[in-house]
Image (tube, rainbow, N blue to C red; front, top):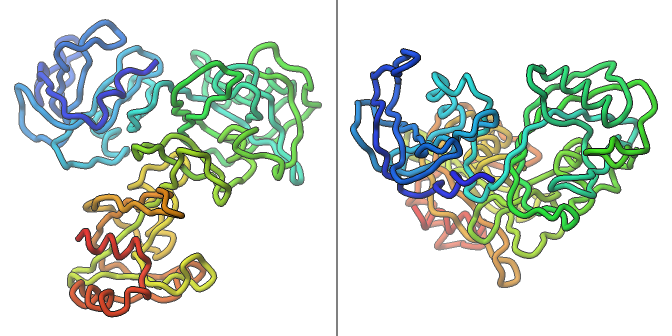
Length: 411
C-alpha cells in the first residue's frame, strides 16, 4: 500500500542533509536542488521519508513547504516527496526534469492524488475487428470479473515490445504480427469490484498499442490473470462491466470524476448518469491579452447553454488529466492557442436540482497569440475589459453562463 500520498496537499517540514551544490557521498554527482528528509517518518526502505525541494535556488539547511506530489518508485521501495513553496505550481514535466539527475535510474510513477493507495504499470494491446474488440475477463486484482485489455507488467530485462508479445501470447494464445500507435495513458480507478475483495484507489499507468494478431484467441483462462478471451461489441461495454482501459480501447469518451473532497476518484463515460457521490470535473480558462482585456467566447448554438457568453475555453477533465492539463488542452482545442496557466482562482461549485453536480477549476493565462476558434464549439469571440464586462453582466445577466459570472466575481 502507498502511504506517502497522505502528505500530498499538506505543509511539510524538511531537514536538508544534501543541499543544492553538494556532492553525493558515494556516487559523487552534484545535487542541482535541495534534498532532505522528513524527520520522524518511516519510508518503505525503513529510513526516514526523503524529499526533493523545488523552487528554491540557494542552499538550505531546512525548509517548510507544500507537498504537491510523490515520486513512487516501482522497482525500489523508497518514495520521494515533492516539496515546493506555498502557492507555487510545477507541471509533471517540470518535476520529472528537475529530479531526473537521480530518478532517471529508477522506474517510477508520479502521483498527485492523495487518495491513491495502490499503483500499477502495464503494457496492453488493443485488438479490433469491425465494431468488436478482443478482451479478457479479469480473474484477479481490483478489476476482477470485468472485461479488460490483454497485457500486463514487464518482467526484469524486458523492453515494451517483448512484454507486449509475451503477455498477448500468455493471455490470448495468439502471436503479435503488427504493433503501432504507441501512447501513454494514466487513469484513476476507485470503484474496485466486490469480487476482488480489495479497497482503495488505484493509479493505473499504461502503454497502449494498436496491434494485429494471428491465431485463435483462447476461450479458457491462463490460470492467473485471464478468465478467457471474448470478442465483444463496443456498444455493450460500460463502466460497470469494463475497465477504464477496455473503454479507452473501445473509443468510449472517458472523463475523470471526483469525490466530495474534489479529488479525482474514478473514471466515467461521458453523458451517462453519474453514480452517487461522484462529481463532474471541469477546467476553464480566462485568457487576457497584454492590454488587460479578456477574450470570451459565445457558446455554439447546438451545445448546452448555446448562445451564452462564457470563459475563453472550458471542458471536462479527461481520464488521467489534472485540472491544469485539461485547461491547457481545452484552450488549444477551442481557440488554437498554446499557453501555460499562470494562476488558479477558487473553484466554482455548480448545482443541479439543488445538489452539487460539478466543480469548475478556473485558470488565468495571458497571450497575444493569434486565435482560431473551433466553429463547432465557438459561435463568436469578443475582447472586453473587465469593467465593461461587469457592467454588461449587471445589465443583462441572462446573456452569460452562470459559472462564468461566478468566476468573474472571484476576480
